[in-house]
Length: 371
Image 1: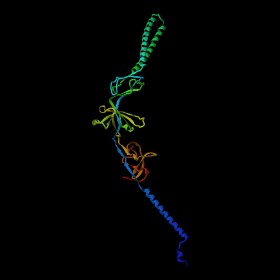
Image 2: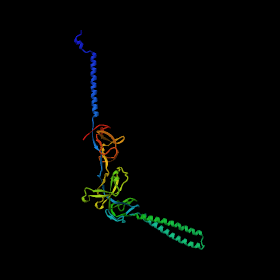
Image 3: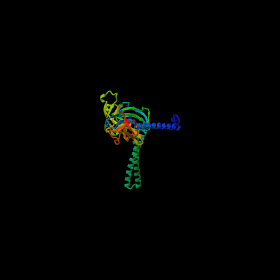
Image 4: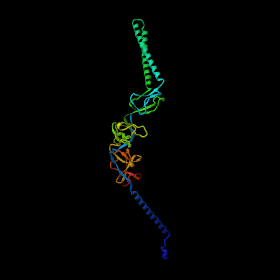
């Protein structure tokens, strides 16, 4: 019989199987812990903030800065070139319509006009003489003194002189018009704003030499986005404010009337011009103003701009339904500050949309709404 110590001592094979069983049990325990952690992470809600889709009827006035200017203004030019001979007005002086403001000297215009007039008078005298000669030859032809050929030649000569006289008259009128262009005439009553050339200086044809303006009618021009022009019409009244430095508090607010609305914009800023008339007795030329334009009259759905996402399918938002999010496509009409105006359709008034934490979301995720 073997001793008891020999009977209880484990064999080598038993030791190996024991170690293997321990490793297997440890691995199973670790897998169960990892699975439990993964399940907890997948079931955790993502914290976000949501906002409601609102419907607003915005009557807010947007103020656009501008300056007043005269509506009737002109930069006067000579249509012919020459040296300025005289100037009869000064800056700030009041002028009347038809008044001579400047005189131009051109050495060729006066002789050309006289030569054209002399040529016209000569041809008119030749035409008169030819008509008399034609009448005399008709009398001789009726008596049978001259042949018909001589009478026809004289008639042809008289007819050719008619064309020559008309041509000379047109030439004389053109020369006279050019001569009159040496006188700079005021097209309307107003005041002299600027003198660009002085007597003795040479003026090119079409070069501005004098600027005048009439203070009877004042206007201002503002530049507005395209969507604001849709609710504006000529004749519509807008509110205007004078500069803050004005001391006349009673006339700080006035009414401006829309005169013209631009229908296109070729500039880089895509803003459209709107011209309004101003009450002349209440304001002066060059004064700083602000013109109020209504932003929007009809009600519309608005959402925070931060909620809008751009995807391959277009603009979308995450809508919260029972604490789970779903992606909804939207169409933005315009921007109003930090809000976007959207078309009615997929989203209705009162719908909850995510505006903070959207970068962590995917379709169908569970969310936790933060206060």
